Structure formats: C-alpha cells, structure tokens
Length: 116
Image (cartoon, rainbow, N blue to C red; front, side):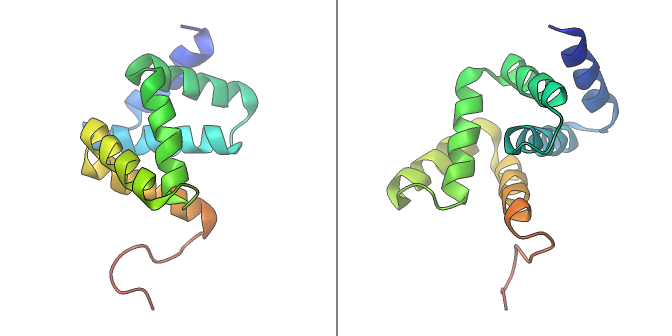
C-alpha cells in the first residue's frame, strides 16, 4: 500500500464514528474519485483503498450500480445490478450511493418522498 493510500485510509477511518458513517464517507470519496472531482493522486489513492478493502469486483459493481442509477443500462440489467449491490453492501449503502450519484447530477435536489 502506498503512503498516499495509507494516509487516505487513515483520514477516512478517523473522520467517521461508526461503520455506516464510514461507508457513507467512502462511497462519497469513491464517487468523487471516479467522477474526476478529486486531484489525480488523491483519486488513485481512494480507488486503491476501495479495491484493497472490497476487491476489484466490488469496484466494478460500484461502477455498474452508478450506471444503473443514472439510467444508462437496460431496466432488467439495472435491477439485477442494484440487487447485487444491495446484497453486497446493504440497503443503507445503496441509499447513500443513490443520493451521491443523484446529487452529482442535480445538486440540492429532492430525492425522497413525493417529488413535486
């Protein structure tokens, strides 16, 4: 593990109080990394940390889930991928991922309840 990856992991671990908050934080960071919102070196460290923690397949599943949320995949494939993501990471993680992805598309938008 590179020094940058170790620093990024330490930063994430010390900035959140529990597992759910850690997952929210890491999903937020990984989405920022893959969307180009982070400097390249930091993005690389975040992606490396995610892959080290969860594996390459989990990273690919995350990318596919992001595409499914954005409507870039056929409905049947989207449903299967979202279900696999929920099975792997849980409903709370999916909700966090969905909110993060949609927030990138339309900042400060309503994501729950009756949308008017």
